[in-house]
Length: 564
Image 1 (spheres, helix red, strand yellow):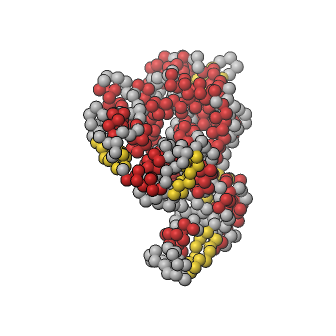
Image 2 (cartoon, one colour):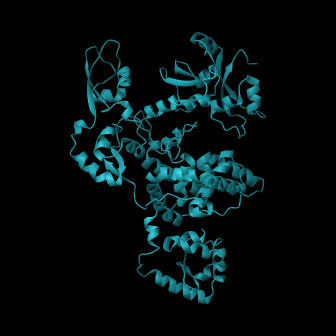
Image 3 (cartoon, helix red, strand yellow):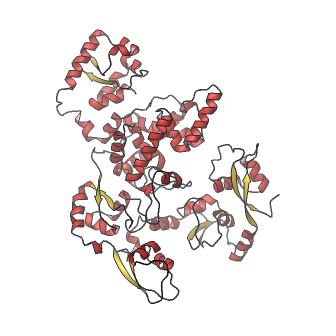
């Protein structure tokens, strides 16, 4: 751990530059004594280094050689001075400014001389508005994430990881089905207890996803003997990928540090992105960047609601805009909180007491509005649920139904939103609708998913890519396509084929399982089955820069008219 990081904990950031040329600091970098704390204080004419440790200085020979007897005496005096009550002054910055607090916890090596690192630094320097934009967006979440990292004793560089993962967009969703600030895929999310339902997605919950991400990073760091560069690489590409790369290097007699490993392209640039960003945050002036002011105080508080609550009602009770409620509680897909809990909301700290008081005096039966509905011919519980933007399970629960069986003339109580759908602008349906309405090149086609449809079928018919179809509709290629779902396609076909011709075309396509053989590549398989490399990668969620492994199973959608 570089000394200038630790000096920030107890002294001002202005002292850092004066430490770099001192031999004490040159030796410290290689010192194995992790428990020692070096505090640097600067007088008018001299640099005083104080070693605060339970161990004798002679226990560390390189460190001991750098410290004269005179310097040891000064260290003792400096330690005594540190114990005295501090007057207000520069130290106050550490307590009031979130950036200084973050810098004080930096533990990773930002001085790596590597072309990948330099490329990221150059990019950040050329794009100062990006840094400004993402840090302003992250202002809602940074204090909480930083506090959680500190509580675990983790490097505070990790508080910046959501910039790399999601650009601090809580609604970010990748083509690989990763969601939220920390970009958990469904399977990893479930492993860490991040539940996903029609009402909510815990992968986007600020509290639970942050806890899961830091727990995951802790476990990965332990797996790789405390090396956070390897832990971060594993967070991006999987622990098995990193371990395999280390085994290959070990077998070849090569170093097994992160910078020496052969990893997927995205992973090779992943760690440099974070370290370069931390280096910019550490000294923004050096890169011509001005960071937004962030006070060292919580942005939000957690308020227990006790039951399901309409988010428009919550915004009104708290005295904030409903978009603010969604941005602090991005896990909620619909117009209300999850009826099954957890029954809590994050609200701006300055509005928390107002919200608690208003909620305490608000009748429980008005927290969600209700409509009486009379069952008519042709109704079923599913169609009623879709009409009122709720679920069959909620209707069954509210009406104490033992099954989905309903009868004509039966009266049902249906929970519904207090305002029109447009009022819930950041709900999942409204976000998708805005994405679908965005103007793009091509002919706009509205398509209703039929039974048996796949992304590949639809994309092929309209001469676009699978990823494009998914992205235009706020989806990932691996998401299920349910019959009746409405899609928007920006077709490259002037006059889209008729439904009948589409059905005939689909009838010639078959799903084929293929097991990779020795010597196979994506291009040879694509050529053999007359398909596209990108489509194979999309169907199987593959990285085209990684090699296929013999025995690996692939799914192909092959037009039997063109198959060998």
